[in-house]
Length: 425
Image 1 (cartoon, rainbow, N blue to C red):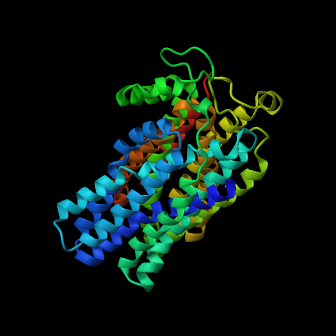
Image 2: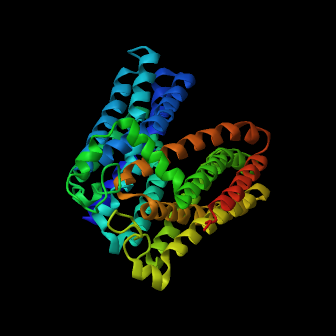
Image 3: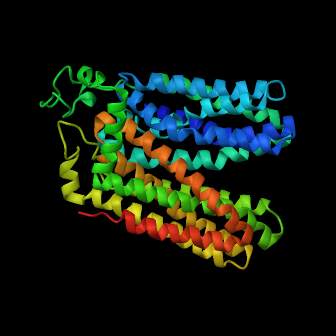
């Protein structure tokens, strides 16, 4: 089941990574309007901040969360195809509205899918499975934009959106057959309950309003020091990562005269993140990431393994040093005077960014209450998307002045993130 999960995750996330560039190049090719193309991309991404928390509530309430994920995949694919069919035929405002509605489902393809990993892997394999799951993000980030570029060059820009939708549909049966949530996943110390695993808890919880569930999800992040620190630190780091993404094409032009070389640097970063995560999957200590908490075991499963090898501290350390290495790569890129030094800098950044993501997932799996896990993942994903957008907005003026200035600003944000991510006991 784990291999099927990973295959479905790669397909879904590659389709997700393709969707933004696909809409951008297709909108530009069909209408010739850069403004419409950019607004379609913005509409697809900006609504994720609203959709994430609500999707998390629905996933946490669902007895078969995989089937809800399958519906989200279908809706996302249908929305993309609807935009494609309307280009040049319906008013631009209507198309942007469809893109916004489609983007509401976006967090399901990222955090919502990862939140179901404990149902597939089980506590004894969760550490290695978390590293493999993070690798699917690296694969998608590497393959998605590249596939769009190849399709646009070979078959025309309008081929990219159908290919994106096809990948989402490929992942649909995997999502539909994900295991159901066990009854104990609904158990917890909520209002009116006091016994672990007591039958009927899920129904009592299901009777709470959506607003109460949303508040509970945000409270779960805010009240847990490690979840709060990991969420805040990852948001700061993500804003800095956006500065790297925006500045690298400009850096490529400065060093070689070709913006395409900047895209190559991003590919190097993604490839090194993938390779480092592959190594991390073989080195993760037994029980790493097993701290997914339940009402029956507030300390998390695998307590004996933690006592022996302390994977809690191990993953917390990976999160901190991964962020530090990412910042070091950005500093090196900022001072690079040759393209090959920039390649080394991109590799260093990837070697930090990959393990950082794996460790972040491990902390969330360990610290999030089981009854709120989906909401924690989707809400955190939405917050990261928002911070990425803010970082991109700040990076534009800096990169136009100097790519080095944008990269140093991004490195400074990584330094702040390191301070925030250091565990407070």
